[in-house]
Length: 68
Image (cartoon, rainbow, N blue to C red; front, side, top):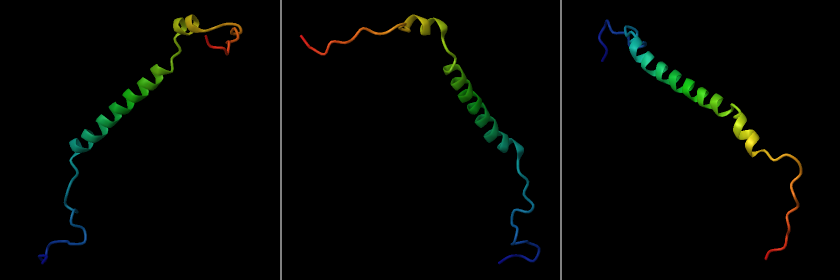
């Protein structure tokens, strides 16, 4: 049973959130999100030398359908 001075409707009324616990969740999440964003941005940067070296200009010769 509840004592006379205890509030059973809001049992966590006198509790205080500890800020270091909140930051231990938010900061790693933000760091992982920024790393993910950096990987995405770096992966979409076009590479000039690789793109021009492997690009075929003009029409391709027709492929023969007969096998040897």
